[in-house]
Image 1 (cartoon, rainbow, N blue to C red):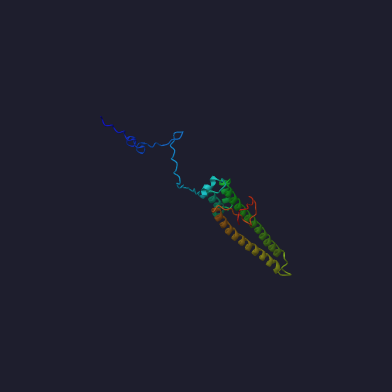
Image 2 (tube, rainbow, N blue to C red):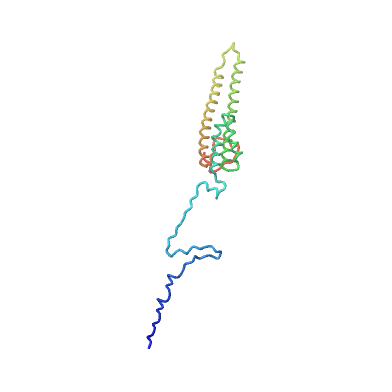
Length: 212
């Protein structure tokens, strides 16, 4: 009688699924590969995007750019250069024409124009007052009767005092002009608004955030 053949072991006959199963990439409906899901408990990586000040124009179109700051500074400090050739007011007029649609450039250009116009107006008034005082003193001295009396010292002293007072006032104003212009130039370079408190508001409007 023939010996019975033992049945093959199912565990040995079937190949190991872990060895034969191939891993294929998973694709989406559009045919693009899809990243496998992260295992449970995996640590997520968070990325924080830091924007530079120049990127602020992406959210605020009126935010000053570096070009705006440079032109706004030139509207003030350029007055010293323009004064050697003609008038200091030429510098802010040029910056206003070049980029006057930008809020920072427009504000600083108008403020510089206001300061220069105020300076020219005060200089004209001082020159007129000094001229009237000198001419009045000379006319009084010419028409005075030198045979009967001497020239009154009060009139001469008053004329001299008025002229000296006008010169002192002009010196104080020019000191304010130089200091305020330099401060405004540095404020413009930092993208800040600046207002000349003593300048007449010929152009522009008052901004609450402007410092002086």
